[in-house]
Image (cartoon, rainbow, N blue to C red; front, side):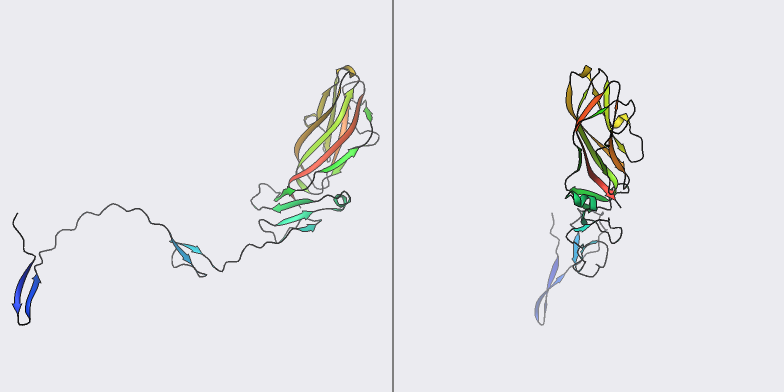
Length: 242
């Protein structure tokens, strides 16, 4: 392959100099493939970046407010922010030494944005034995046990009793929820087995209650008499609102 000179050397009054030999411009080559995108540029400054291609780290943005939980007897409805925490306790709960720890979350589904973080279930008990002979749900001479929902929302409701009947038939115990009629679908249903068996029974249900709804246990029998003792009712919030 012949050698192509890239420069010539000439002698001038100041000495030898190399003069480059430049050929004509060749055609533009094809565009190469797109390279891999580099990492995003960060803009760490209190002022906004010059374009949206930066990830802005705003150095003077205010931190979300945090305050220790305060004890309230009315759910706040203004000045709310995600993560806000309260201790809720009304007068009846205070009598029982009970409070509920709640946290606000705007993204919670439905109307109830205060989620239960902790605290004991509210317990009501009825001492002594009671017998029932009614074929429709009814109270004992001393009704209950019962509890009043302090807030509207979703609650877990637990109930239990020692139950034994005199005939081979069914016996029921169910919570009456507010003004609604009690239903078998919510009940503990027991087969009496001609009075030869008695056991402690427990059930949990999750239901929505309005504020001040009374949750009260009621009872009915399929025949004969049924004895109920050690009757207990528990109420615990899941999500609540004002």
